[in-house]
Length: 137
Length: 66
Image (cartoon, rainbow over all chains, first blue to last red; front, top):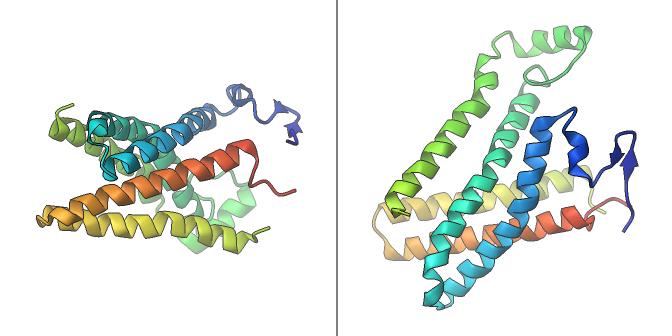
């Protein structure tokens, strides 16, 4: 496997993200864990669907673990949507000239796009709490 | 190697198709169809496996441009 480097070190080393992008670090740590949790949930769920009734106790807790691990991915995805939908005006790091040009096209109101990731996150967390209560885990 | 547009379409369909199926099944479950509940769970399982396998490919560099 070819290893990739840049000036901040080996790119597979997630800790290199900490000094300059803590959000990306959290996102990547959760994603790495999510990959294995999702495979575990998929296998357990598939076996349960195929008739392994003794796995019933593992399905709901695994679903909740996957739910928690998906949380940063949901936030980052909606943030990226805001970024793309406003051509970089919301959550972007544009220079002055580009900001003016983008603002001319997208209009001034960015509040909706800045708050969208947090609104979706709130719904996501509310869903998790509702699942906790409903399933009485 | 996939082009950017194919890649974007591939990822979008990975999210949109299960989401539509999942929403349909969720509506069915709320409406009280027993089969819908199993379908909902099946969609979750398939989506989860896809997510895991694609993530694993990403982590191990299986989808990297060479």
